[in-house]
Structure formats: C-alpha cells, structure tokens
Length: 492
Image 1 (tube, one colour):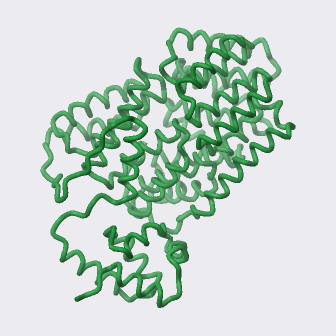
Image 2 (spheres, helix red, strand yellow; image 1 turned 90 degrees about the horizontal axis):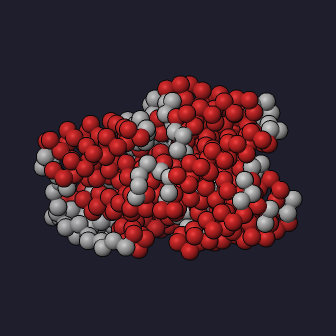
Image 3 (cartoon, helix red, strand yellow; image 1 turned 90 degrees about the vertical axis):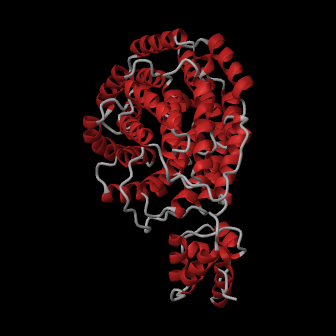
C-alpha cells in the first residue's frame, strides 16, 4: 500500500536527522502541526506540503503522497485541531455551546441576495466610522438572516460588533463583545479556515489581554494561508499586540509592497513605528494616511503619542489629539491623552479642564457596562485626583472583570496617577499574570501616568517580567517574512 503523507514525512525527516522542532524552524511551520501530520491526525494543506517537500529536498515525494491521500478521502477533513481549540476558547469565555461542523458539509450554494448584502456591508466596514459601521452591521444582519451559512458575512458582523464595543458605540457593549465572539464561533463552524473570523478573534484577544492565544491563532492562520494578505495582517496584529512590533513590522511592510493602499497594513505600520520608538518616522508616514482616513481617531491617538515623544513634536501632538476629539468626542481615550499633552506642555490648568470634560462625557455615557472604556475613565478620575471615584471604578472592574489582563493594565495607570505605588505595581503584576504582554506599549506610555514609577526597583522588576515573557514567546515566533503575500484581500 502507498505511504500516507504522514508516513512519508516521518521517513524523510528521519533520513535528514531532523527533529520536528528543527524541521518546523527550517520551513517555518509549527512543529505541533508537523506532529499531527506525521501521526495522520491532520490533513495538510497544499502550501504546507510544498514548503516541507522543498525543505527536505524530497523531489515531490510528499506532494505525491498527499495526492494519493486526497484520492482516498471521501469526506471533507475534520476541523483542524488548532481551529477547534479557538472554538473551545470561545465556549469557555463566552459560555457558548459549540457544535462541530458536519463532515462533508457543502457551503457552495449561497443565496445571491445574501451575497450582495454581504458585499455592500463589507465595503462599509473599511471606513471605521460609527455611521458606516452601524449601516454595515444592518446589512450583514440581513445577509446572515437570509443565509446563515455565509461565513464571510458572519465573520464581518462579528467585526462590526467588536468595533461597536471597542469604540463605545452601543448601549449594550458587553453584549456586543459576546456577540462578536459568538459570530467568530459560528463562522468557524461553517468555515474553519475563515481568515476574517480569526482576525476578529485576535482583535477581541486584545480587549481580554489574551496575547498568547492571539499569537497561536495568528500564526496558525498565517501558516495555513501564506499567500493571504489578510492572514499576514492577522498574525502581524497578534505579534504587535504581544510586544513584538519588530516581528510584526516586516509582515505589514510585505503586505504594503503588494498593496500600497491596504488600510490595515498602513495603520499597523504606524503603530509598529510608535512601539519601536521610531517616533518621527511614525509621524511622517502617518500624515498621508490620516489625510485619507480622517475618521480614524484610534490612529490619531498613536500619532499624537509618537509626536509627543519626539524631540520637537509636542505642538503637533496637541493638534492631532484635538482633531481626534473632533472626529469622535465620545472617545474617552482621546480626552485623557489630550490632558496629558497639555500637562507635558506645562499648562496644568488646561489639562484639568480637558480631563473634566472627558470625565463629564464618561459619566453621561453610563459606562459601567463597557469595561474597557470604564477602565480609561478610572484614569481620568485619577488625573483629576478624585480618589473616591477612581477607587469605586477600580473596585467595580476588579469584581466584574478581574481576570482581564488588559483591564488590569489600564487600572495600573489609574493607580499610578493617584501616586499609590504599591497598588499600581501589584496591578501591573496581576495584568502580567492574566496574560498581558504589551511591554512596548507600556514603555511608550511611561511618560504619562506611570512617569513617577520609572525609578522604582519594584516597578522595574515587574517590567522585566513582562520583557522576559515576550522574549520567551519571541523565540517561538520568528517572523515568516520570506513567505509570499499575493492575494489582495482587505481587512480592517
């Protein structure tokens, strides 16, 4: 009987004297994936087998073995183990029941009206402004209602829900976040290889502080789709969020070489330059981007911080932060940053006036249900030295979102602003224990609330713990920038 692809892989690997980990680094392909292929527990993609065949100088033996396997297969392959772990995560975190997809399920017959609604909704998502996101979600709701098997529409609706949560554009923010996770799971049930669903999951991982999970998912989808621009950006986003902007930047740059207009790649490049401390370059490349994406308040935040951290850019930083508030005056993060910029400018009165306006917006918006925005509001109260409001907010969030590494990180800033060094450092330590790894972001924000902690031995110890956690992961995530990126798929 002909060898299976797993048997052929094991024979060829051993003939070269390589371990699975060594082969994985040479390709690069996750060695866990190679192990599952060798043990015939996962059917490989064509791109993976071609890469491994080339690395082993197999002369097409693995490609032939896979073709023979394909001819013997009478059903669609089972859900890949890595993707099923994502679905299991969603079950645990959102309390959702998960049902594996039926084997041999067909998704080819798509309702034509549903497809048209999806295309229109997808196009609106690129604007990232509230009116466009709300209109896109309405179209995607109708698309999914007509055809609940249309995985791209389900995944895009998940993104729209996440965006509403992230920006505070909904009266039920936690429900929006849970809905985004539910859509991710539903999309993966229909299409386990959905790049859009993986991308939305990686975005929600940021809000939860699940950086290791995001790295696993990002690398998995990129290795399975090495020709996809969107998969490259998904992995780059996971790397950047986890404190590895130096690995994310080559991926984003490779996407821009293929498609200079790719909005997500442009935005990630700006953020990577900020996180790497390349402040003047971040500002320079951001100017044309902001000219074409005037509604992107989130990137204006990054540009304002980069400009403020450059030798001569404080005036420009103030202008950019002010423009961000004009774009979205409900964004509490912008009010907080603008106040800090006025303080850096030496005008404490203006800083307090800005923070007071931001705190007023926070109170009028009834932010208790949106844990992300509430954490930023805690920092606003602390900047105003309202200890009572700050501690009430901190207590509320610890009781309701205490295992969220990102929330813990934001509360670290609030406690640092109050001058409570032991509590602030303990909160940062708890953030690290709950999965937060964005040490590069922390370094860029050190001149804001935590500026008084930088000489603290205890603070430096916790910061080093974060650096070590990132270093441990970095060794497992060497940038696969040599892999081609050709398909022009636009993600947000």
